[in-house]
Image (tube, rainbow, N blue to C red; front, side):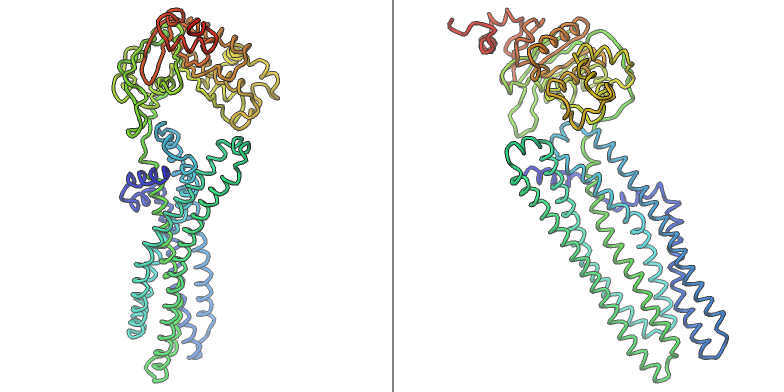
Length: 590
């Protein structure tokens, strides 16, 4: 149900002029597009002349004139039209690939810079489908689709003019046929467009469900839930198939009836023209030329039908692509050099925040200060809002009310790159990216030297991992770090944050997957970092933060107490209970 709500929201935000946007994609390639389209039109015009050349051949044959020149002219028209059309088609296909490249580059830039709130709300699989399947649909419609529409219309108009010159009565029969085709296409095309949009949306849903499976692949296997997830995927696949069949059905209806109407017109023209030839009112060569023209018009009519169908498909793709373009994204801003500086200060002033209006607020007037070098710990039960503190500092989300100050300035008033340049962030699940260990460590500090890497490897106790990996720092650690243990992933994330030499270091449950020995080592790392850096940690293991300069106790979205370990054991009952539960204080009543 949430997927459908998100899709409806995206539809409401889509621009209302997809055709204008579709044409804008071709603007950077307009020169080559005009050349390719012109060659295609020229090839079609040469083809349009072939029936008239054939009439010339027949008239020469009937008059006993030499046939060499008419036959050579006909052969030249056939061969020349084919070659010119082939060159034009190649240029158009090349442009199509270029347009897809441009759109994908722009879309990737948008997707990577989306706000965290948008990515949390949407389905990554559907976003990937828009980047891949939807952009592919543009290749045909922005090149051959548009040029075929123009070429088909010009050739059709030219053929009609020639027909009117050859014979007015037969021309009226043909004109009636064209009116029937036009009415048919007016009724069918909107249905094709609607079915195409629904088919692409169903494809995006299937991609989202597949991404859900791969995102928790081990859990699915361990739960023996393959059949359940297969059923969900099959449901989405069947829905996509059903909508695809609808597109194919309406396309078949338009193609079949168009061909049927043209064939009926051919029979009427043959009967009427044959009677006029028999009565001596028309030359046989004129009838043959007219019939050849009628057959020839099937090509531009087919081009028009196909291009209009492709246009509906392309407009559906443009709507889906532009829905992404309308999503809220962060401004890139200029790159900020990595510079050492004084420890940052963090102040929360009566901050309230909720992830969605329909959900209870996470923060209900949070206020605390963490200034200068030192270690600040955020503790409290699950759901107290501890991790959300980091999200507001990093501006993944903005506070609903109140202020979050970094060095005395509201974080909303600072450019994002400047804000984040001095912050190191270790997430709770410590994600690593596919690639080498060096690439993961240098993600936030691409200019780090070998000495810098050696320093953080030693600090984060990664020396054994580096020596074990084939290739050392250049060893591949697999998709999502599958070759690493949970503790190793956390230490990689810690080293990555330290390599940035941050003025503010945020660590969310950084010891959750470490054994006792590595936890003790990490305490030493945090203590050392806190001498020169403002370190804020979210901790469930109180043993790692008993020596913190200040401990902020949070509960139900509020700060209930601030102090040292010893002070809070005396003054705050919740902290005393948490400490007793971890054997860091006597149990209540003893």
